[in-house]
Length: 135
Image 1 (cartoon, rainbow, N blue to C red):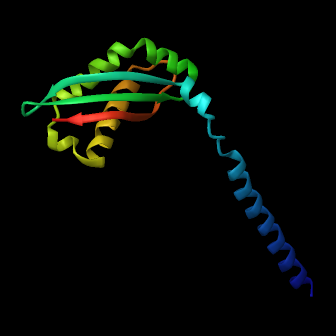
Image 2 (cartoon, helix red, strand yellow):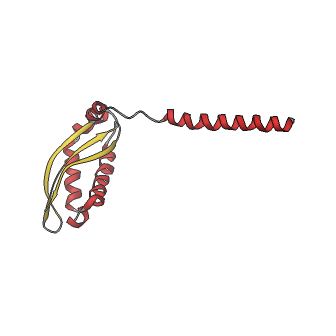
Image 3 (tube, one colour):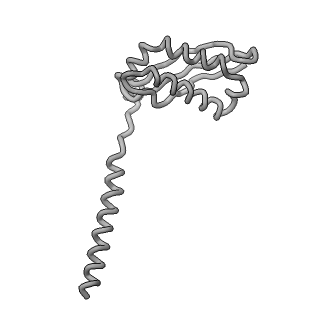
């Protein structure tokens, strides 16, 4: 009988620990930022038209989201550097490499990585391509 009570008690303790652990994870998750916070931490990169390899050209504009308003302000000051990165990267890429979702996502990831190398007050968390034409 005593072993039965110990087994039930131990099962209850394990249940409470597991339940608290998983509910604690849910509470620990960060609250998603409001759209106002996203806009405040984002910078619009106006349309860039540049040649790419194989005698083609690309026309692209982006909105770059950072992790804070402070980082957004820094990125805004670095807009000329961001444009330079975009132009440099586009000049080394072919039309075929930019095709489809995977091509655009790969290009966005390259730009994100390069811009994050510049950032001192936070980081880029997402790049939204707002227009994209390759001809």
